Image (cartoon, rainbow, N blue to C red; front, side, top):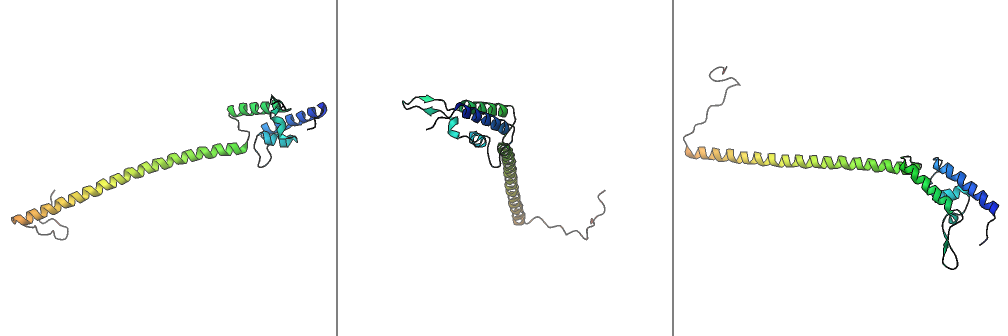
Length: 165
């Protein structure tokens, strides 16, 4: 693997810092996220430079731009903790999550209301059936005794013996 010169490294670091400022300001290319992959693409450097490397003896050494990746992640985290969302996709995801939570709450409340109404309906129907059975039983009981006479039906909506008032 070829080594890069100090001048190329300085130029790459300047390009990375410039791309970092643009990304953290919210200037993201279409369809991209605010992450190391986009940072590398915008700076025109290989993404592998942001990660640690292994020596031949198995020890690790920092990647040439790993300190910039850590700075980028640190600044991005600080912005997120301050409530500023740099990535419009992340903002949309958060908005949609909040909307889903609100809809779940509404659906749960509606389900609860429907359950209460169904319970009320069941109780009302049971009560009406019980009252009907009681009325039927009383009618059969009075018919069996034979000492109850039916009253004549009211004529045309007027009281048979005058006004009650």
